[in-house]
Length: 286
Image 1 (spheres, helix red, strand yellow):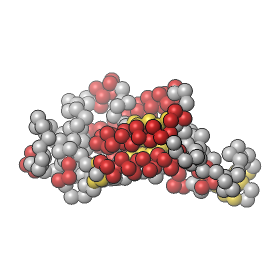
Image 2 (cartoon, one colour):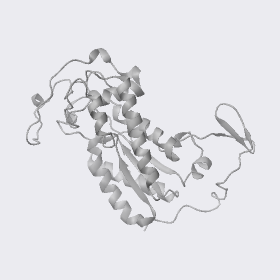
Image 3 (cartoon, rainbow, N blue to C red):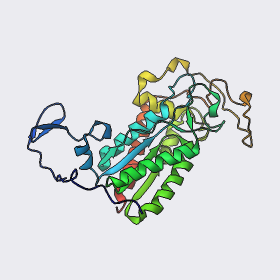
Image 4 (cartoon, rainbow, N blue to C red):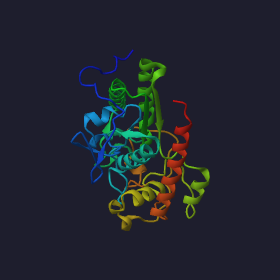
């Protein structure tokens, strides 16, 4: 079993703190000390503020540093993970840990693999061990509800392995969930988003309509819209072959077209996904 929760002289304050006077700029004055009011980001908290939130959801965003064609930045998956995580936290009383920005490598026909400059990957073993360490630290601090939100498909098997190993250590007292943004999308919304071009499937939908639309909504200044061009979908091979044939993957890294992307479609995806995830989490008896 995991070591007991951290206790001792440093943890003698009362979580049910009664704030007496509010100050400006989102800060609260408590006994003469200014504190962040209702922040969800752990990186903005003091350890006092963090330790009072252990009854909340601990939400860990996990992304990747990976090519996303000529029109999107390398940090797309981490941006999406952080943005979704913060919106979930606002709805379900959660705190958002600093994002794990590196992930496992993509396969050639789901992101291009390690062929493109700027793609910085972890081994599956390393990713698994990092997740295990973070989960153990969160539980040791007192959290019982943990949500890992991954915006990079290839991370999931290694995150799930870490969850399984940690769950055996923690027992039934700790609940660990793994979510992404594409599985909770309503089927009717997929039809609405792909109103101009057919849905190519999630593997090829890399740097295409959904990710581009989400970035147009979350971080429009980072989208090089003039670099979006009409293209045919890549045709995956029937197997994974190594060494990777560089000529089998489009040279710009895009596997399907991003044309018809828009911030409005991004907004619809976000609202739909957040609603569906929030409804699910609020129904859990934990």
